[in-house]
Image 1 (cartoon, one colour):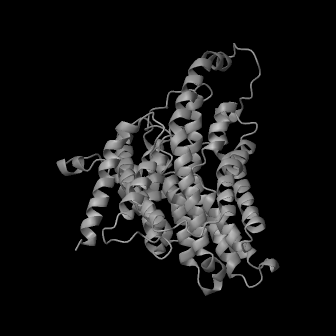
Image 2 (cartoon, rainbow, N blue to C red):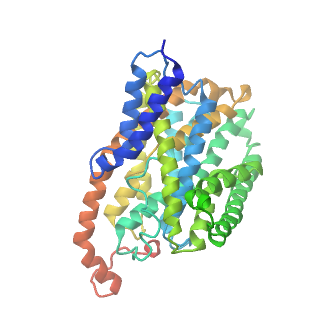
Image 3 (tube, one colour):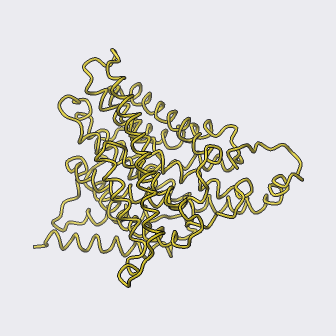
Length: 449
């Protein structure tokens, strides 16, 4: 008789080993780690060995907490990678993606869910909220490089860095800013008469204003405190030197937990806290150590989650899926997000190839799993619409994430490699424009500064 936990050891041991070895083999190839993990999970759980595949619907509490941990570690890593000082002007592309692209994506998903799929308005809102955020976990092929790798570059010349910055900063902030829409779905489902708008005050004042403000303030205060500890109390013992970089994990957990205790958005606080820490000693080499530790933990946790996701697919997660829902899922990935992205970036300082990449690589992943499991776990008999739609929502979201893993995983490296070659060919023209010696007006504006 095979012991379940022995099988678990084999599965997770292989996943962790792959997290260490596979990046060396897949570099610049049309393949990604997430594809390998999901495929391996499917095969491992499809083999009869006495251990049933994981059920994401029935075990939504476990899914919520496991994906929650992966996302917050990834948010800390994303914040540490950003080499562009925070400013309203310098982060112009980020604000466009958050203020225009994300609401347009949510609105389109809500409309498709309500009008095409016939979902209750609250359920359609939940669908929009969970598919809108760009995932910080699965975007490793297109995220910003390690800290200090872009500090000296001119963003209006180095378009590749602007692309990576835009996607990394968007993924860092939209995981917190999608929360109000998730809570809006819960509030709408619980409202006895949503049309009376009696719920607007509670949602606006508490779920939007209070929780966002607290999340930002907590990130600033706790991030600054973390910077003091990391850079004003240097390692002075062999034990502390051996644990170098672990502050990234401890800070992530502390900032997130403390912020959630006082009712703020912990996702937002972790990313803001990472930005504050990153600014503390702008060119200190220790940022690379912090980033390496965060990446290691993130990759290991990602491997576990995606193997389990593959197992859930083997267990029939997509069974309730209909042809119409497949079409909706593909439309969200291939039409809605790219179109919303291009609209949001109109007038930005990015080149048209850069805009196309940023708009198209709105990767959906582990963060979406968290939002859906969280909303369903918060739902009760008063939010019956969400509970009834659980299996249908999980099937649709599972398909969207699977399609994103496959489509974006296969195309990310070739697209970025081709983009780098284009950038090298066109660099002299951009350098001339940056120096004021080139012709043409271009469309550069403050977003590229």
